[in-house]
Length: 163
Image 1 (cartoon, rainbow, N blue to C red):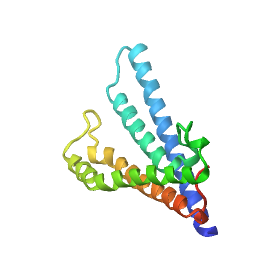
Image 2: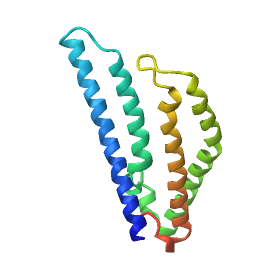
Image 3: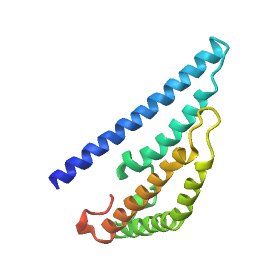
């Protein structure tokens, strides 16, 4: 998996770069808003919209393409005390639920996102289907990620279950 691993590693680094850029844009817009509001007494309206869109994209983009399984926040007081076979069962059940819900709702989510092309943001005029399209990326990534977790839990020889 040398070439594929290299390509995936490169893509992951670019996803991290985009996430860092989104955070920088959000922080810059926030500082600009503070400056224009409190120093010049002439606040800019579009900065809050930029911050909101950067936050939305940052959270969903990061969760979909940057966050690794071992970096997720878990409440594992019970999970960590169970034997490996029970943990694999928990993984299969939880991941199966995630895959089922996201797969079932994906067509409706896509319809809604595509429907939003008729709306534009108030200040920047950004089409709302573009703004919300990151949710489809997130949903598909969650389906793929949790399918892989489920497969690794069902067939530990594929890479082992999460520990």
